[in-house]
Length: 171
Length: 171
DNA sequence: GATACCGGTTGCATAGTGCACCCGGAATTT
DNA sequence: AAATTCCGGGTGCACTATGCAACCGGTATC
Image (tube, rainbow over all chains, first blue to last red; front, side, top):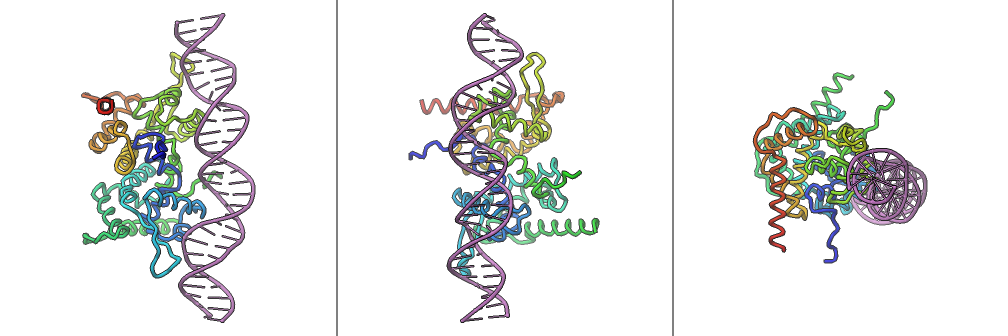
């Protein structure tokens, strides 16, 4: 108790924004989710946007506190911390897809970085569900019940083809 | 030229977050969209979350600059400024629905404020399209090609019923 | 002619962001 | 064994954004 009203309102959109409404949280989740970056240095160094270390640290802490990310030690390397998604953040897939779809329509996106968004957009809810199932296997340790090609691999493949096409036309 | 790289990256999700990634922009759009609040004082005073006037002013200016909102004078009242959505912000409906849906699943939403989200969630993409068509009529002046009950009215009706039910059970 | 309404602005304190650099411990290389 | 690299961060500082309250001149209403 006594922690009663810490929220601006009980509106679902508002509450979601209280959790996700800044410019970095969803970028970090995107990198873990689509880029499969699981370690701090990966998230820091391989970030397209160049997030600062203190911001990344603060966001990972926040996301962990809010149950969107878990952190566990790599048993082989004492220092290595493995960051994973939770069911809660895995269910952000539709949000991220819609955000990406909207960005593709109205903002100056780069072709290479938007192919993944296009594939997910075109694939529709059924593809999202398959992707979420894969994320559950990787991040939650759910036993894999799927056969056939991985959505993650398909997304990466599409990305690599776009990069190759871009280099061919510009170089 | 020479305004070249003002973006962190060309990723659709990142670019969307550069535009929408703060805790107020989407709340303002939500109020215009679902609450049909079209004037500054309405947005200021009838806000569930109690936005501050300088923040509201700054957000409306930003959103206008980014093409998500337009502002026009009410011909009858010289002071009155009417804020409207644009096609770009109308197409945020799926994003807002997914955000609301996610919030409903994982955050401490209030029953009254989340019925709209539930109706839109259950209605699916076809309902979203109908709602977007209505928004185009109201905000863009597109001639109405629809008959039958309005989605907006249905959402409001559901909200009022939830309020009544809440009052009955708690009072 | 007074009052309330209109869309904001201003000042100020506090909190968050962005940047560069630094840190000690653990793992790896030589 | 010694040196280097890798690990997840922390620190200091300047700048910007947020939140609050009080205020503003013009306009419509009574």
